[in-house]
Image (cartoon, rainbow, N blue to C red):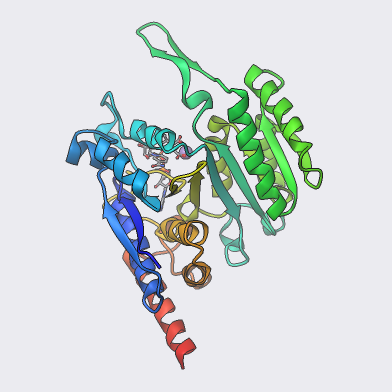
Length: 356
Ligand code: NAD
Ligand code: IPM
Ligand code: MN
């Protein structure tokens, strides 16, 4: 078996703190495994500006294209907010240049997480849905986009091919899950949303085993709160998916737990937590490492088919949540490093037990 090349974009503010944690847990989980990987550090985001003069240096995109997977923590923050090319621009460009048109963001409330949810247990029980967010078009990429002194413009644009491919992605995923797709749009107002819903119906005809329902995005924000357990696969345009996925994350207790994967037609997937660089808590050693551990686990499953190694990592996450060995965002008192060491110790102990 070949050595898997993983490009590591360590990110900004809490980015490096959680990346270190995620990679340490990966190392522990692979200790007695044949899985071989190489970590390739590349400048990106604010770190890209600082080390190489640009949020997405050409060398980084070249290396990413050759990789088996790209692993990112989170980028951005006040240090670079006033630059003309901000870290966030680099993120949009890497998604676009790798053609990562589908972003998969899971919301699952496990039995050990129920008590941490801000919602009552009877509301969150059995919640397990996935947001399929269109990632390389829509409001984020439409032209014209202009910021002038007395006016500004953004454009929401979608073409047939862009909507069709994200719909197929969502329906195929639903076939592997609970065969239920929810289409989110604002088709009572927006032309692009009318188009979105029309193509959803056309594509849906190819998947007669999948049930379809529809929500306007405003009503969907309520439904995520009031009946999250009723959803399976939720297909959204770019901007709505950004917003709804943060809302959905919160019902698990903390956004600091949620991974994501961005996929294209071919080439490497990109894996990243859905949250940002959390400048408000950076440098204090209290960032929640769970999102990064889950992100690495997702990469192991989806890019490398290493389910057993991922299962060890996920079991260690369940263990720390169950025992409340968690950071302040989840109501705990532990540091990032303490939580990470608890996960590593758990993995080691269980391997010893398995060997005996
Ligand atoms: P954020 O997601 O960074 O933070 C929102 C809140 O969640 C903060 O209170 C933060 O402390 C908390 N939080 C997030 N991750 C956490 C973790 N792992 N552990 C504990 N608490 C956590 O959103 P923001 O503050 O709006 O944005 C900060 C910066 O991040 C901005 O520059 C933004 O553009 C950028 N951003 C980057 C990404 C990315 O890299 N994919 C995603 C979102 C935002
Ligand atoms: C995310 C982030 C990004 C987005 C920003 C930082 C460009 O919020 O990954 O959710 O809006 O896509
Ligand atoms: Mn976001």
